[in-house]
Length: 245
Image (cartoon, rainbow, N blue to C red; front, side):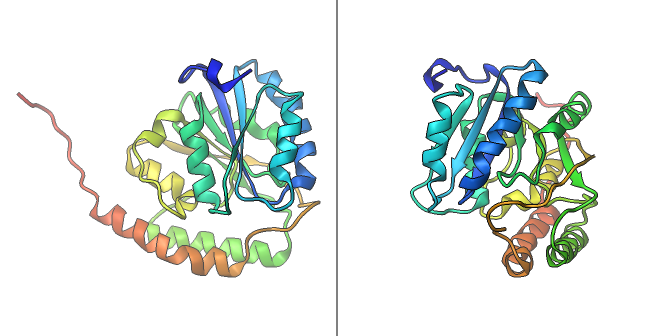
């Protein structure tokens, strides 16, 4: 299936997956997606965004495309960050519902139906990794980051760092794109009046490759973004027009 044959919103589901040096995981991820997505009985696509990988991840996706017409590939000239990769995927997506996930096999495609089951009631459904399979230092840094983020943004999301989320396509028509936005998508959606829910999902240990995150980029790098979102939330105008001639 070529992208030119797809009209806007002609699909039910788009799965958007940023990749940065995840070659060892991609074949296994595609196998898992092929196992679970057809069971949904939906018209779908899978969009891989190669964020400047140096290990041949993009080339491998091209090879996988030869046998899988559902796959699409966006390639960046250089590494631009997870928010940029997600933004490119959101803009390219043709599905009425967009599901995001990581490429490291820690998110499980088998959990996608759990998110979709809530989409009749909500606009955004966030995965909650209630039992983490990570090294202790990553668990601690993530817990601290979530606590700080929720405290300063007056939020209650238990696990905003989980990439496994589902959104209605129209949610992205009303938000501002910026570096670091992926950490605050539930809050940004709530600010625009969309309904947000959480569901418990599984979480697997990383078997191949290296994590791209540590205490520095979880806490330090995201702090300025957090302050910007806090300012935006407090300064946002709220009004409700009941009549206009």
